[in-house]
Image 1 (spheres, one colour):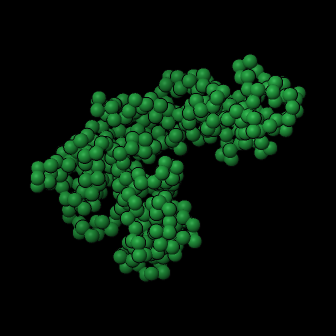
Image 2 (image 1 turned 180 degrees about the vertical axis):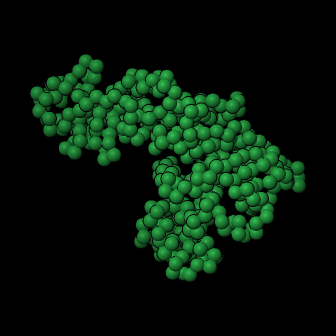
Image 3 (image 1 turned 135 degrees about the horizontal axis):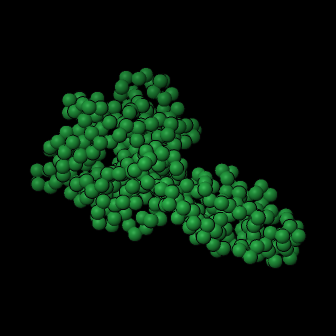
Length: 388
């Protein structure tokens, strides 16, 4: 456990970056520091590995004051990932990853074998090992940075806005990869971001800091969204925090309708039998069961189904794995107002209306599924494996 006890960082010009901060960062968890510019997030992170020394207070690692450890040994015991990866441009990818093991005295062959193993773990193709950083995309470089931080198997991983310089699609992939790696390795991760959505998705616990480095609230994401400590936290979370809360409602309890699903080669009689007053559209799927789009029963029954003439089906959600937020998003994006549920292979398993999703939300509230007072952090994360 990392314990931050009444830590203050005051610079010679009088600027206070961190003011009396106290936090207990649990083992094998992702603790996210989030807040506006100037709130001391990065300064706090750098004090943990003594890149910045506190003016007052102390930081304990497993009960020992970090100032009692040699600074080089302390830093080598912690992985560190920064924005834009910070790779050595003159070294190959495999040698970038092997940097810390080599500093610790590992042989070249052993260090490179470890590097290749980590390339696979973070989703990098082995063919990239002999390339240089400039030959990789931004997302690939960030994966190299994560692999390098993990190379010596440190118990603590410090991450300073590591995904903020890549596009949203790559960023989501990197976030998912980090959660997967964390599930496998169980590191103690301290993660800095200015993005509340990223904090809610990744954090086991989230520390919201005010300008000037004062702690506003420290809580699991579900509790943070449901019970902001004060007006500052509520304002920082934004006006759509109710939508974010849906990330903690599982979609597995939704009752799906399968009658409106028809294959692209369905006959006229089969199509006519599927129409209902409640849903005057049918979802057409391809031969493998993947959704193609929506069509009106009478038009579909009139002749051969033309996929190009179908209405778009919006964004499908994976039933049981994704949250009610993803399901609601799919329903809103669909011109029919119905969301399409798919399995892990992308095959349609049912459809669900906005009304049914709203009823599921009310039922979840009534059953207290998001009450963090009666659940552990791990249970909260298990509810939704992939937060929307």
